[in-house]
Length: 203
Image (cartoon, rainbow, N blue to C red; front, side):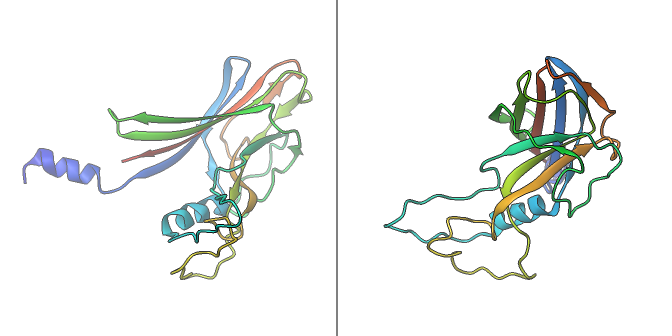
């Protein structure tokens, strides 16, 4: 095998999964970093790959629950609490939903990169003025309460409507000052605040 082919095989023998976040005030980027994960997101990825089938139901319409169904985000003011794998909420959450959410799929075959992007936008006069110290994203994700090894050789049930184990809205992604992801951000309520998150998969 020549070196070029060998290098190509080495390049394709693994993939990297990375989460990146950008925080903007109006059109100005004030933070750019990689995020921390919770166990709920990691368990959901495994379940999506390992799921087998879904029974067809002729009475009720089919509605699948995937990990990115009903995404939402929140910001908070805490600057001292690091992210843990079992974290279920922001430490000091401002419980105000974004004004809008924009999803994008991006494929860059020149660099063999696939990206799922979510942009959460708070319009002016929606959030109070504050110092932003943390931000998080909630997805419809697994409860991660299954016993390992979990053997799923049939469907999860005719009425489950899900490929995830006991799905619920869970904190899956967090960035914070306490983790060293960014410096405290001074936000004024008349500004637009945007939280952009990208999941990148690449060899």
